[in-house]
Image 1 (cartoon, rainbow, N blue to C red):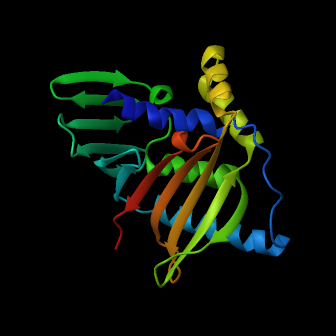
Image 2: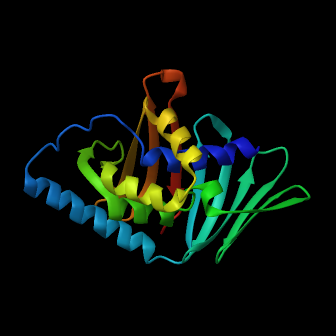
Amino acid sequence: MRKLWWLFALIFLLLGCSVHTEPSPTGTISDQTSLRENLNQIVKRQLDREPLSFSIILEDHSDYRFVGEQKGADWTLKSEGTDEPIKLTKKGDQIELVQSDNREKLSQRQLGLISPRDHLILLQEAAGRIKPIPATEEGIEGMEIILDKGKIGQIVEQQMGSQETAREVALNASRKIQVRYHLWYRTRDRELTRMEIHLDSTNPSSEKRVRYIFRNP
């Protein structure tokens, strides 16, 4: 089951290392400004919510669902549908992984980005091109965000420190991968209902998706 957590870590490593050429922003400057204002409103609303309840679904492991709750920078995550229960807890700088009777201390570098707060702050700080995407539900709007590679590169350098080997592995793995965020939110109050992280590969069998569902009022 540890391989599930490495997928989360891989997402973080790949964010700053993609070598794909991003398309130029579509629409006018005012369109981008409006979308960015919407994004900031969505992020602020979620960051102000405590506690924030959510579920995580990994596309390749659809039988596994992780149910979590976040309070500030601290969070808990529990598995559903696994043979052996998994619980992950972050409190302060301490992260603990419990699987059956086994306990293990982990670092933020080992796990990468897991909590919604981490992803939302990343979007707020490093959003590049933004465009609207269609939603299938009435009263729901969507947007796609591709992150600014320069800013993400700086974040990766700070997180990985002197781990040159890890950076090189991430770079090699990301040469055929692009990362996109999809957000769906309520039109009337900018309440986020779903977030998806897409890892798009030139090899369709290698494409990944992680879905966050928010249990908000």
